[in-house]
Image 1 (cartoon, rainbow, N blue to C red):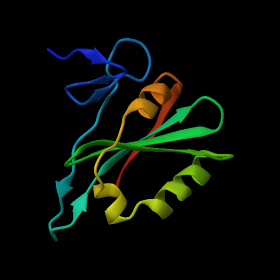
Image 2: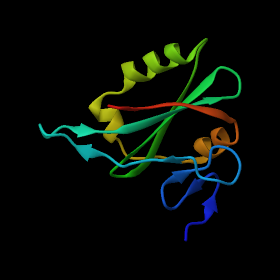
Image 3: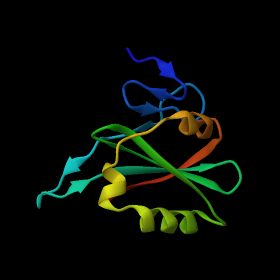
Image 4: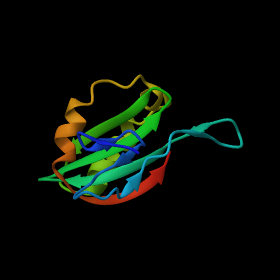
Length: 112
């Protein structure tokens, strides 16, 4: 049985709002050509902030961007989303815990 820890569960489920898990974050997978793909989850937060979350071989990774719209924030994320960034070692999750409390809605899930 998983337990809630600061918005994230040990079973890799994210609590968006309330007490029921709404999203499963799937770790990286290999494509037919040997490339690594990541399932990225995008969330709308308070204000003009958008959160992008994925899992790599070292753990949970996230970036947040502030912009006038989701499409602007997604473009900023995609411009930074190099193979090096996506595979980089996971850091402190303190920022993610704070952002988790400000999530308003899930925007989309996409594969990189």
